[in-house]
Length: 484
Image 1 (cartoon, rainbow, N blue to C red):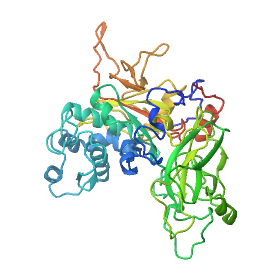
Image 2 (spheres, helix red, strand yellow):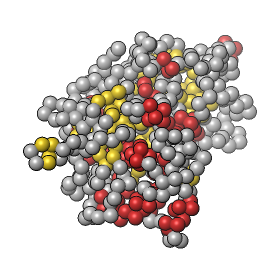
Image 3 (cartoon, one colour):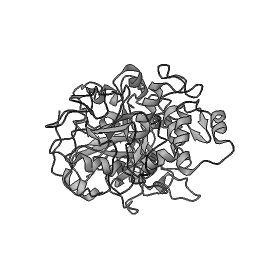
Image 4 (cartoon, rainbow, N blue to C red):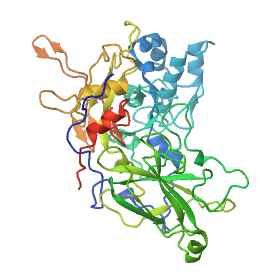
């Protein structure tokens, strides 16, 4: 799919929360639940990752042809408990096809709690888990309509036709049950793995061998990821040890939300790479002895586009024999409109892509083999960010180059000039009441069939899911962010 056309409207990206008390942003810093010494509350990286899924499901698994091929599995899932006993009965001793296995993996991931697994696929989000009272517990009983819809929205939101795994922010606030399921994270942990499948992340996350040099921030082992911050392109940023950090601290700053290695090991990736590093200490004697400094300053990294972007913070102990305490981190010397650390999920993921909804578990036993996407009862709509929205949606969803790309064409989520919106509205930044495109029945349009559960996707950067990154960045570069 050619995406070289300009595909973004000449509008600013959604403004991120600033130090003005904007609703929903007060939890972005060390207050309301943070400890007195400046340490973060509990949320562990594993729990945070469950709140922010990766967009990594192969598009081919949800193509019209694949759904027909796996129609028996889909019918079974939609009418049976989601557990090993049920799956063993369905398989009757045969091995699963790769497409069946991947589909099951993402259904289980969206539906079940993290302490459940089915045929080796692990639960993550628990959208139909033990605590999802309104949707029902799919592990114990056949899924309700609500359960099918919320899992469908979750699965569709995670489709990536480029074979990559990209962190996204999934939001759903049209009813209290979905709002609880997609609570926004107060901090965003640094990504340890790069996006390309089969590629590991920075080697600096690996353990250090014996006799590794100490007191050098260029060391490429023994580092840990902390959190993601935000800033405006070209904006100066200064970090200092947090109040909870009393020992010397090696700090490395990377662009985007991914970890990185030293400046001598470039990533070769537009979305990740080294920005700055150094050893920080509040003790003048250590600064004199080891070349440490009180603060680390850098210019906000360029994302190839205007608007606020992100930086990732890594930390390491100068002496390997003295591991850092879990609370060791940095803090901003001064916050700003875009300058935040740690930044919340809402501040890091600001580009509203669109919404996904429908019922994957409707009957799909008939149909011609096809690579087309969004077939049967599956739908998507796009936000007003995109100038050429179909180019973006095809780039993001389509499993192959053959036309047509979609069975059910995506439309605008909300009304635009000349086009009715597919959703009833937007609440807290999330679309709700989204429907299939209306079909004419005689002289009057049919009543739209609206979904009770819709997932709205936000991206960290507008080019995160683009195949032609250069064209995407060129289209987005002239825009200026709107400040609060």
